[in-house]
Length: 85
Image (cartoon, rainbow, N blue to C red; front, side, top):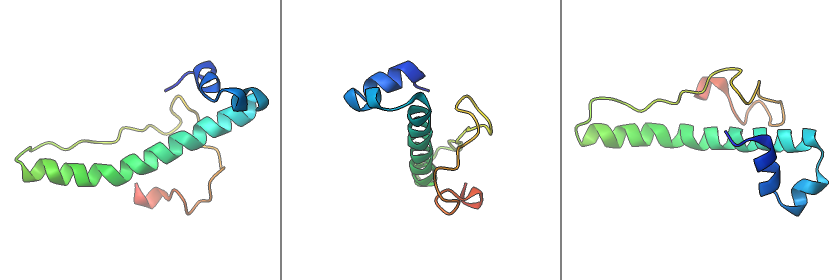
């Protein structure tokens, strides 16, 4: 996870105009997007690994209430559906 201060610095001048709460929400959104993309990639990658003879599968180890905190409700429920994970 990117530390808050580093994330805010990466935003540059835009990050300077945002409140800390806005930066935290933006970071949470970016992590949710990254998790959604990873969740789409993972089954395809595991299928590729099985096709070349690997017997183990990669897993997505995201804990509920992990270091980024409980997900904020900035995305609609349909965007990240628990049944799709």
